[in-house]
Length: 326
Image (cartoon, rainbow, N blue to C red; front, side):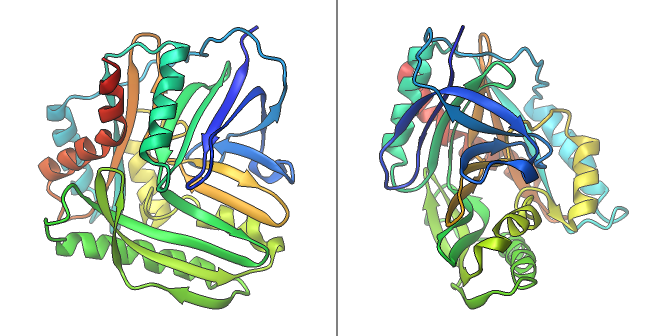
């Protein structure tokens, strides 16, 4: 029997390697202390139980047929997607696609890629490799903290906008997008009995090969409110849009693929500590190829060709290290 695996590395920490079993659970019923991964709307969640027994080293592969779309198809669909904004009362919505990479990964190749990602993003991302018969194999390096902290003190970030060079100026569209994300997250956080709220100025931060606009948000909150806050914050406007319900309906209408773990959550929960990330910059290992999940925030002023290029830039987080294998 093949082992289910959990390999991960948090920023500025050492990588850990576990074999064991992934257990399905509703998000509300996750154990008090666990490492978990969930899908984009938290309707599916899995937590890991370590087992010292090491079985044969092979990956679990999904048989799910993923719809890949060409650049021409993407531009047409995105234009139609945007045309619905006014009638559906959508300010911003995240549209994603799946990029096919003709690369076959063995177990050793997958672990090598994981280790390369750990080295490349040692201080800037949660890096992981998970594999199980139910959901297959996923690898990722995600920079976006949903909620992290110890005792009563928590931190999060409002992250939006993407550019591939520091010299390129931010557009008004990107500042608007960032403001929408930040305002919505703060409204949710301030609905709880928080103390000592501190919000940074809007900063430009580098996450791997790309740059984003970011507000760091710090506050104090009793651990008894942590799980309800997680569920209210996720999915954030950065992965769905605004208003959330309207944007979600539009996404379901136009995206042809199941996002799976892309834009879901991954991380650790305990009574007095948590470190939870939004699962971006990730791929799924298929039998003879890789599926890279890529998305971007769309507003009425977005230019489809620029949005395509943004997803191509984001793909470099994983692609440049995959290509080292060839």
